[in-house]
Amino acid sequence: MNIIFVGPPGAGKGTQAQIVSKTFKIPHISTGDMLRTEMDSGSKLGNQVKDIVTLGKLVNDDLMNQIVKERLSKSDAVSGFILDGFPRTLNQAKSLDEILKSMGKQIDRVIYVDVPERVIVERLSARRMCPKCGRNYNMITDPPKADEMCDDCHVHLITRDDDKPETVKKRYEIYRELTSPVIAYYRQKNVLFTIDGTMKMKDIEKHLIEMIKGRK
Ligand code: AMP
Image 1 (cartoon, rainbow, N blue to C red):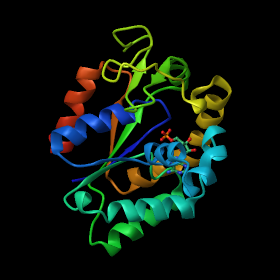
Image 2 (spheres, rainbow, N blue to C red; image 1 turned 180 degrees about the horizontal axis):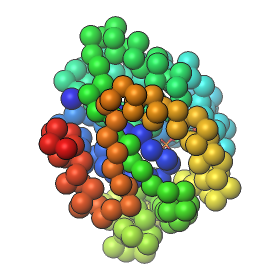
Image 3 (tube, rainbow, N blue to C red; image 1 turned 45 degrees about the vertical axis):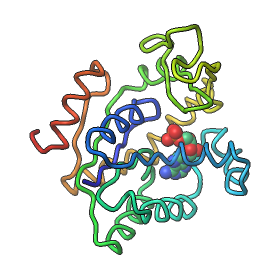
Image 4 (cartoon, helix red, strand yellow; image 1 turned 90 degrees about the horizontal axis):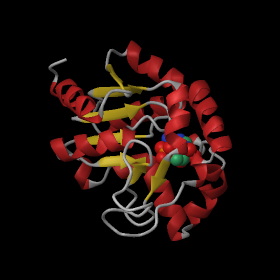
């Protein structure tokens, strides 16, 4: 099963993709996580994208297409994958079609996580991340057990640079301008499934699994 999660920043795509990844035993490929790992390691690629990511802008399409092409050719993605954060532009969506075609594959489901802008701004300003394991928390709806500490790693949680209010606004504008056409593209191809990302997590999980199993 080859799945894409698309939706505004902070829609909960990462959390939901992790659930689907565990349930269907296919890798969760988050391009944002991949870039952050490169940045943390101080690699050439990481340094190349650092300023762009911190400012909430998009990394150029050619580079992203290359990163995803390499990742999808790894052995763990043979029997399926979940892409989270890619494609983010129409150009990336079309390149992905080409990449998959050359591998004899296709997209089975595109899950659009629909969340209004007002909720996004609220959520992202309350989001914290564990710098060690990458787990996300929300200080209002899903806080850690102890004050601002990761439940698993017991290290202090951080606010991602790109979750700062002025950057969130920028990221949402970019989403509206560049990523909305991607949603229309997949709708036209009849592979788009919409989920209301404001529902309770348990309900989202149930709907998601039904959608992916083809019962919706
Ligand atoms: P995310 O964690 O998906 O919100 O991604 C964090 C940041 O990584 C984005 O704001 C972009 O700067 C960069 N990024 C991730 N995926 C892509 C992509 N498909 N195209 C361009 N930039 C990306």
